[in-house]
Image 1 (cartoon, rainbow, N blue to C red):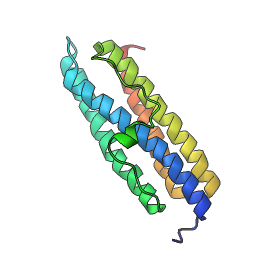
Image 2: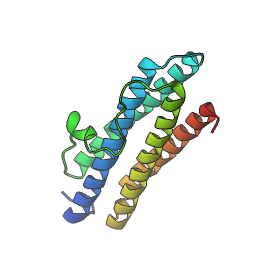
Image 3: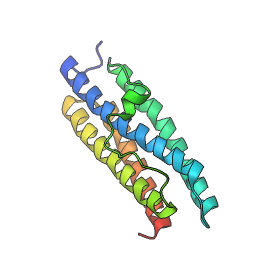
Length: 153
């Protein structure tokens, strides 16, 4: 495979992408679960916000996994992908305020792993992954901002 990145660089980038995939998958699952379970006077607003965000995350997963394949690595699936995430699993269904707090933290975790991946990709000379991760950072920062605006923090 000759895409202008040596095998060692492709492996490092794919490993970094795997972390972004894991964090994105965990955040997708959490956001979708909150969409199903949110209650209270802001139900309609939060239900719609969470739906918008989980749809964006779902679409992002495909691009991340496909980039791993383009680099010659396999993308993990199902439980194996989420098990590597830094985003904690909930015990029970949190309040709507806690949902917002958790999703802000989840988006910040995705941005953190995307920034680390972007650095690894830049060092490997992989501009395609740098661009992909830049888009993930922008989406995560926007999502966190919107969540904070609903949260009042």
